[in-house]
Length: 561
Image (cartoon, rainbow, N blue to C red; front, side, top):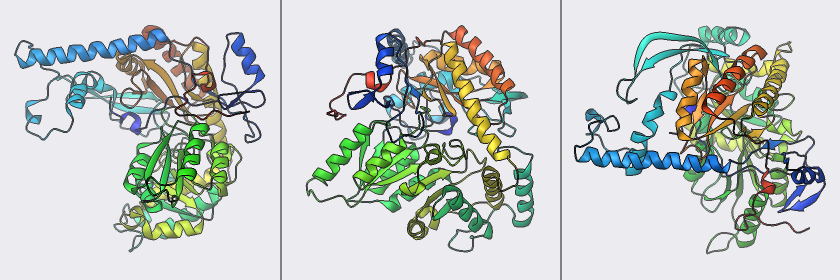
């Protein structure tokens, strides 16, 4: 499967790690006596609170893939691959009469877009289940959506619309975390009013004549919301990362990037020309080892000190449902005098008692994060992104960032949508609606995760993350799950290799404050039925944190007590 389902392309992890307060040290992690006792009893659960750095429990669960399931998954991919090559061979010699898995005649004169194996994989595996992605909707992406029905008569190479509309489909895939993606209410009214006054487009960049009073208002509000000196808004979230990182670092600089970082961060790091080193997902030992090596050895060959060391992390990792261990990252950043770039695309609005993201969630000082990045595309129901930080940083980016200098300004109605929704979250609209949405999302998240675990599914991620991955594993079950859920009027996002490790295909649910308990109960009932039908309840209720996994001496540095 391509990394496009759900609109997110992410690097995949091995596993997130766990730390607990008080107890024995094992492989550099503190293991509580309670966890040790549970392990002895054969009931290992991922519990935890990490020393003095954490002001709240930090609970993440990553149950191991059952051995039989892993073997059968590999066998499934092996059989598909073997028969795919066999049928390609038979088609070449005109023995095989079925040509569904071959390119259309009208496509064969174009330059090849893929390498040989990518072409093979797309034709023989992806095309079998392509109907699970790119489904067009024709309504607001709220708690329920309307989907245009389509059919394919050529093995999913092309689709034709039937003219029918599948109405009232429960939307479990959109990033509408706080429910602001709607066509009624104060946000819609304010945006409509601005549309009448300013029109749709600005037709210029901010540095020419595209700088509106609305843009100035938005940036001041964003800075106030984040608790930083200044902020700058951009028209595209992806470009906020990919175009600003090259403006911050270059040749002679070092980027330390989490292996699970979003494609926009990866692209920005590559475009910068800086040296890139990857650390294990959310693993502070791996990060610290890279930081130590960078300080001790400096640049390759010359051994000169690095000009800058920049750590790239995300708030919520959108395919794994994990939350960055920010208190530890900040502690390491201060210890080794590095800079920290925090991408809060999925966490801003969705985490923290006041919706201010992962910094608010952990009760940390925003000044400890050098570059605070986020997007308006999720919790605010709009588009674009922002960078927040010190005034010197923002002034520098205004003149050096390609995204600021060459990109067209944000559309005025979009700006007003952001301003109105952000004021609502901050309580500046005179209501408690924003606070209620934040609380509702948190309640929905915990309830949905708890019910899925009780049913026996393997669920990844942090208990407070509104991104909920449900493990499917086998290739045939990816398409089957998506189709069966749509039959039951529920729209879900399914993801497989290469967007995930080959044996870790999954369905990804995104919760919203717009979901009522009745909607969630309906979805859970259908998920339960499909889980029984497809035999997806793999959980053995043995949640194993990374500290109980084999120790990899090539990557981690063992802590001496």
